[in-house]
Image 1 (cartoon, rainbow, N blue to C red):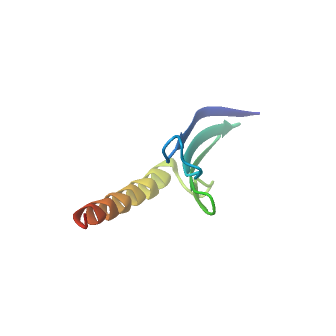
Image 2: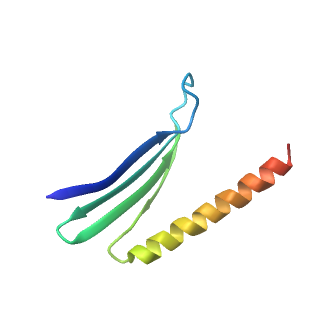
Length: 82
């Protein structure tokens, strides 16, 4: 049986928006296998990162840190355009 250890869902848009942008983060354990998911979605598309059995938890964290760094660099660039 799966055991959810972490489950968070966050809307990315203003409350009165008709857009459905969201982020879902989930970690669950099935027997001794830890599975983790990061999903970023909008009305039309979604991107998901899963920790697979091939990835160590450290590998998965490294992927998310790299993604976080790229998002930060992109935000910094865009803010300079204002």
